[in-house]
Image (cartoon, rainbow, N blue to C red; front, side, top):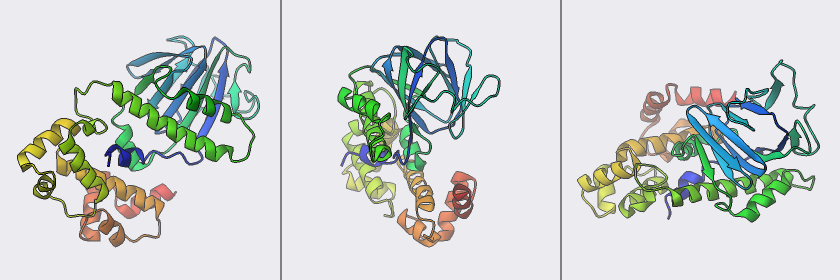
Length: 312
């Protein structure tokens, strides 16, 4: 199996926030919602995105992935001072502090300073991608630009239409379309990216590393050691360790620990009634005590505290 399948199965849209934004210059929006990932499709005009030291310009048909939770600015011109801020929970305020999430609404799924504005985009927001999803998204740059045509245009057009429809099951269909667009965008980025450095998503290029990742992903409960993994991959321990480090950027056992604990985080949230012994067994720890010690060393809180905090 393609080892990417397990990683990209993490970011799943569930009641995702989707919106068509329509703007007339001058405009600039400071997005501080803290989401795990924003997916933006430019449907008309041109716009600039800036986060940290990254700057990109996007035009009609382009797809942009913005990896959170760091804030970013989207505007009609680079350097424009933002006049609107998007806060956590998609709460919109103007520069003077007044709320504008309702006054700038223009019907189903449409928002902006001008319903006939020349610059428009469709935005899909992954508020929380889960810990497994974050492992995948961490491999992306802060801003990823896919030029027009790199992602199936018919899918882009369909999402653009569905965002503003009032038909039944609109939200469920938008979620599935958003997931498809994300996977296609990541695949397009990987296919055009030179394989020049370690990357969890690009490790599929090495069949030995891909095999090791498959084993870890499919059987995290197995008591894997470097020797057992190397034997399954039909190479020596030294060979596996060197190739894995070169392709992924982490030693095999370090990656396995991260994978197991990411799975555990998502299990603790998804199945609140599941006891710690059961969680530990599912992710390859021999006891709840060993699991709790590893979890706290990795996350800084106990599994029970993590589960309680996420529930809250």
